[in-house]
Amino acid sequence: MNWLSDHYIEVFGALTGIIYVILEIRQSIWLWPLGLITSVIYIWVFFTSKFYADMGLQTYYVLISIYGWYWWLKGGKKYKKDSLPVTNISMKLAAILLFVFLALFVLIWFILVKYTDSPIPIGDAFTTALSVVATWMLARKIIEHWVLWIIADLVSIGLYIYKGLFPTVILFAVYTVMAVIGFREWRKTVNMEYGITELENQERETLNT
Figure 1 (cartoon, rainbow, N blue to C red):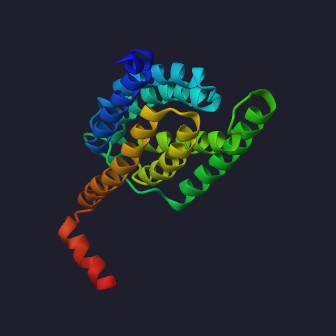
Figure 2 (cartoon, rainbow, N blue to C red):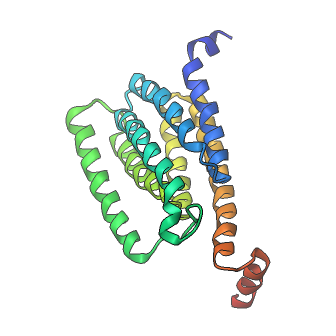
């Protein structure tokens, strides 16, 4: 009980984070207002732990939550649908986002090394840059964002074990499993958008192997 009283903010942030991913898997627009709450909580958690890039990332999450909320409400018009559909990333956009990731990674790494006392600047910069790109892809309902989350979550687990943020370690372990589930569930939606049932897709994969 003493431990919980000392870490209640971190525990609350972990619980809201899990609910956030559940809503994300279900493509519920309520994930965005919940994301605002979670981000505010983790700004404080990461500040006290000296994970400055992650703290800045949470500030970005506040802004991207507003952006994502808008796109999930209005973005369907671009595709002549009532709601924003799940789509695959194009090669052109993938190349652009790769460049954005690399530029952010180098910039954040330099800032952390030069101006902060971050204990693991390279890992902090990597997960931050990858998370920025993944969250933007989520706002546009691009299915491959789940793959980026799996990578970022696995790296984050190692970082948080190092810092002793054990409730957050549990959270990101759950995130990793849920990201795999989310990718599978969203893939069914993509198949439906193109008029392909999951059973038909499995049959095609069998024929191609």
